[in-house]
Length: 77
Image (cartoon, rainbow, N blue to C red; front, side):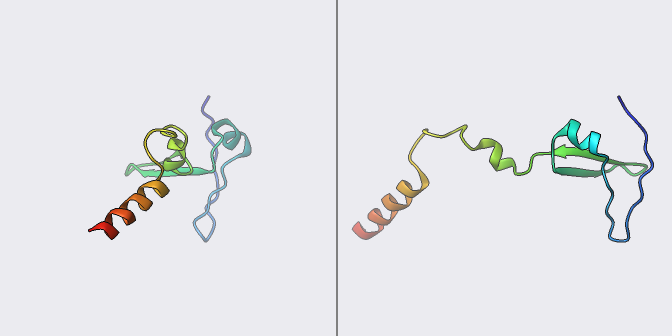
């Protein structure tokens, strides 16, 4: 499963991840972990918030409805 590959780091600090590895992990974002004696690249969600979209849909009022309600309350005060 693991395949050691020597990759070149560009002057801009970029490293190419082989296509088969990118396809296997199906991600465009990685977390870089410096462990002192090695660097680990871990797949990361593009946007953690994006993973929650839809999960809480329909639970409670929308943010627009909440803003309208707060504006209405502020006018009454």
